[in-house]
Image (tube, rainbow, N blue to C red):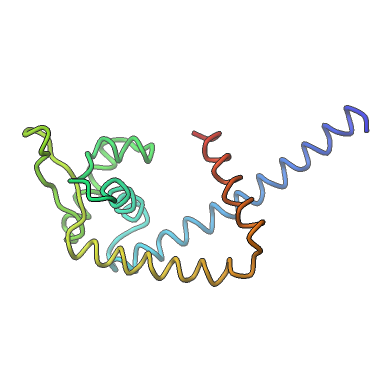
Length: 156
């Protein structure tokens, strides 16, 4: 195979991947809104991203997560995150608590209601993923996980 042929083939493969990722991202945006509505009927897709990151940051029993860490993890402006946090607070899904390591700082964590609703939604989502991925063989699942991890690392 010539260098030109290899480059043409590679370009085609990259174009196919870009197209599939675009389709996945469109589906993901739509799914985020549906998942948000499962947590609270008035929550939007941006709120879903925030509450997911707050839950992730407090998994394992942490006291809470700083808003600035949420903004950084999501690649969002602090003012955007602040508006979303206010909405989630008003919906009773998150709360601000004192930082035990810094009396001046405030941390975010899910309320009992927020944790319950988010947990129920996550359980339902995992059940749906299992139903889809149960048709895949273990080698393909391992490959998908490994390659998605690699792609996420390269994108960051």
